[in-house]
Length: 574
Image (tube, rainbow, N blue to C red):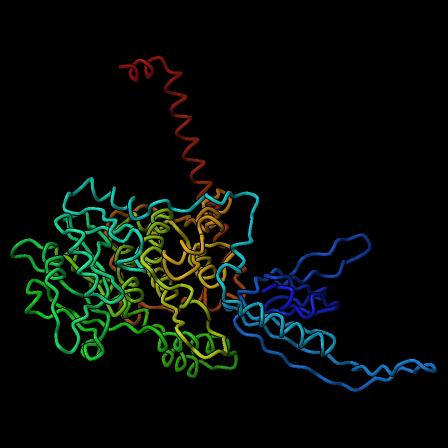
């Protein structure tokens, strides 16, 4: 397929671009294989045109078009010339609703041009082949292809654990993805368990996702595992190898907790289709706790309803509060935080090991394990540590980004497997940053950038559904990493929290309804101006940098004085 085949009209003059909170701009609209560009008309003689819009077409979630037909125009014709019937004053309006929740409006002269532009954008934004997406063509001059890709994220995590315990080992049983197509080639497993035991246990877990280590709690040596559901089925099948694997995690007399992210009723129904839960008789040391978390269609519909409510400017206070409650998004945030706190409490306060799973183990399971680590581990609250957490617990762990983030809140397409699980995670992290404004090294800006790039990106970090697919598509060899871009000094500063002060304690968030707030920085980002907030943060940065400079100068002055004072110099030498 050639991109040129999908572009019916490449350039249109005198297009008017409108966006909420911004003055309208007229210019030339151009469509390329991956971008929609609008260059404004020069302001005066000799002035160059400015690019007012540079939109990645993959970011377009829905295209709405409206055409206006004013009347037919027949110019006079000379003898023998063909009749020229054209639409006089015809025009069209295209509304682009983007995955990052921005809404753009284009007024295009000419009905045919309008329809062609709309058709071209729809076709280009629907290209589903991973290797035809923009990250495979994007080549920023400041980066090399190999930069930023974590070479061995699981292996690096294991090296940190290996300095504290010998009870775990690195297994390459999944080196060729034959045991579990959604796990990375290397996983961390109990040292006492053989490769053959892992293979047999994998056959007993959905998708081959046998229990693997997610987090080692250094304070007391407890661990958090994750897996897919056991395939007990209606006949209550057993797997001695799976029982041995989980049994090897606990010492005699210890107990562990299984946090199932489904309701007890849903888990029971899953048994009729081949799934199920771990029966008490087979796993006597493990206690099962059900904490249902929505995923799939209910979560996607909640996201859609919230965005609709946020965009409705006609709502009064009562109706707004009613719409906010009925969409149930904040209830999902509360439930996710509560479940993550439960997992963290089992590890830190109960000093018990935890296994987290739902059905497949690629959605709500990862939401809980990743959030629990942000709560427990100060290392995960640094910019670098948070990137490593995302790489390890979302990307390498097999969250299907390509399926879940195929559509955002505006799409008119029939829902398939879309679900904003990753957005829900980012929202929960924002809640933590709001309740603990000094404890996270990164700012809200990083969370917004991650949301944008999960749905449409210049970089290959969030492409595909698992590591196996990324290997087949040669993502690491052919695209740039988002982490490499964010780690550039000039970019990195944009995402730092100026108020950050390292906090080595566990941060226990309040999950009371009054404590959960709407993430206005995301859901109102394109609806109202953030000018005054941006100015306030710029002033905070100025004060912090000024304070740091003053402290540094004071320290240097004291040191200089002590070195110039003979008595002080003799004291230092002693």
